[in-house]
Length: 202
Image (cartoon, rainbow, N blue to C red; front, side, top):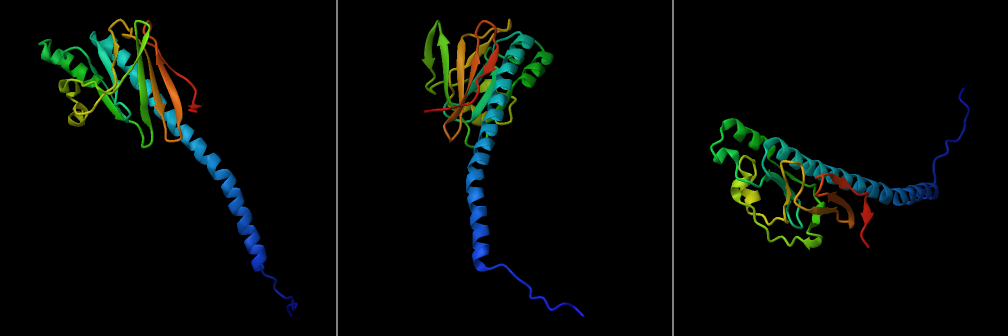
């Protein structure tokens, strides 16, 4: 025979208390998790841009012509394309043309991440790019989104020479909707690009 023991359940008050504690815990942890994910997203985006800028220098060295890195003013697009006339159009052979096409690239930052500004220091004077730059449409030949890229307004380009130097010291700021930003710095003398740690704009 089974013992006749009453089965005890949860009262409404106990259930409400548990739900309240879970909501309190979620309210405390979700903002922290979202902040961490946002920082990771911004950091990954900035690292992607840093790699693209570094590849611009490599392409200039390998191709023997000036390459440029340009980004959309207050936008999310960027591109690595030749600054000088393409070897393909100067009659130097199909092999050089293939190399140039392989050296070109374009990309887009994730949603919510933008290039907030680009500062190019010419002769020691800081000049803020205003977004009035236009790049010759032929520079984008070979890229799948060449038509869209040709119609955008670009920041002042950062030029890399075949010897590995840049035309000027430059700063590229990548930011998100939380006003967090990461600063990328390009040194003119070496062409090296570095990335500062994430800061919150005040």
